[in-house]
Length: 468
Ligand SMILES: *Cc1c(COP(=O)(O)O)cnc(C)c1O
Image 1 (cartoon, rainbow, N blue to C red):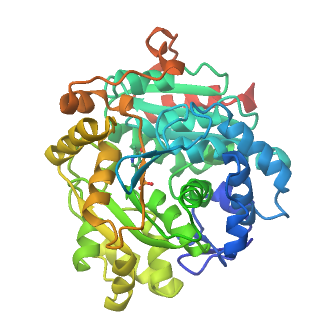
Image 2: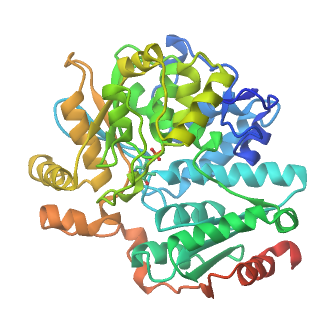
């Protein structure tokens, strides 16, 4: 499989380069040169497979036989999903006559990012070992992404990982999910400063070219194509279970950086009948404004009860834009540059109409989110986190007119990850799952440093096992 950049200037790459590089050198995002398309008979043949088997078969075309055999990839998907808290990995729960929650939060950190990250850590390790290389992953977190990255990289041979968090400014659950991982290749650094200070330190390390080379710095950010590819199988699994390819489905996805909903769109590119894609937003509603009125205008980010969707610019949207513009890299580059410069994305009317025919936007404020959590609890006995609740409200408001079409809502976080909002809405405090119940008793390990680049670089250098 070859990959193109959305900005049209970088040379085509194979999967391994795309995995390790993340971003293309012309600043664009990678997309497959051609989508693998399955026939209806091939889709039917995948019904009822265990999740790791389905995942290996659907991801393998994006990896390619030259990079890795199906058997090798299957070994990785089996290991990645082995420790999940539900034997179905991503179970479907029926909410009403046509809406289903696709629970993506049974991984180690209780949020959907584990679905991709657990596989990504193993893919990185495999490719690095094959090339005889090592990397040091550094990242800054205000809470959730750090723990998913740490769980994905712990105990991997070719990876060291250092995650910076602002001292005292993450919730205790979030901190403990990072600091109680005592693997030798994991280090947590509490910085005496804000999340912005942490992000600035990470940027400064990447901008320090000699340090970057010495440490082989790397990141596992949300624009990495392998993360999107690893999110495709659960949408396919849900659609197949509900009768696809012989029955169409809709998906409702609480959306931030547009990665998860892009994977739902990808199964449509691969031949499944996806009738509609519903995008749930909180008050940060840039995607809703775009789909309703072709108005993609940046506004300041406002905090909400669904913090993983508090975004201003959805970085993965560029991939859809590239397709909407007929895969014209020069036009995509010009559109993105004007967006950065002017704060408003100039999408041609015809391209916007194509997007708005398939994608439908929905926005809900915090009061509406709490009301929806309460409604689900009282009506269906279902405890939903604030992100998931925006998805279920969106599904109800915007389900396709044909009532024979089921709507699958991506349930992106476990309710126990946002216990305050859930308790406020329902009076019921969701307990942590049994495998995490002792989180508050586990030993923590982290170091504390001021927001000082030289000291942080010294720490990273001492931690990286290449020097051991
Ligand atoms: C990351 C995240 C989202 C947003 O997903 P994107 O792929 O960035 O659109 C939604 N809900 C939760 C709980 C998340 O952690």
